[in-house]
Length: 160
View 1: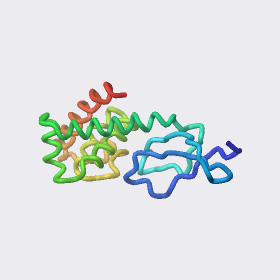
View 2: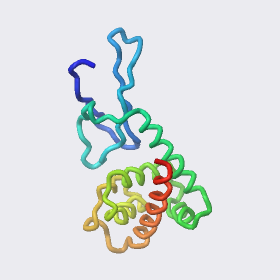
View 3: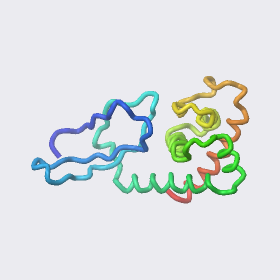
View 4: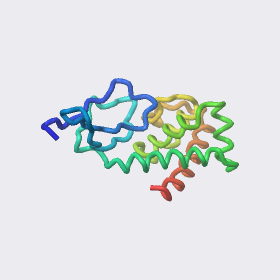
């Protein structure tokens, strides 16, 4: 690779599970896969990503597997899955799972309850939410989010 060491990220980062970086050959007849970068904080997204920060492309496959397993869990008769589906009111499971996966991967376990409650309440920018930013009457959603993340942590611990 030439001296280019950073990748400029697009302004819009919503609804993404990550980025696959490729490099076009000079003749534009082939590409080289450089790696994968999982989604980042939607509230304060970086403008660029260093090539050295890319993960192997296998990381993308692992992340897709985590998302698929979580969606499959939410379609079961598990009591937590049933409660989550009733709260979501026909919102796509894939979007919710992607948000919870980002929270699981980037958030502090201490904040899972609060940020997860915001995700269930419909705030798509909740991954960075903190205890101080959450309304006190959201305790039922917070408890459900905490139970969901505990289940997902168990499941993803087996997958990853």
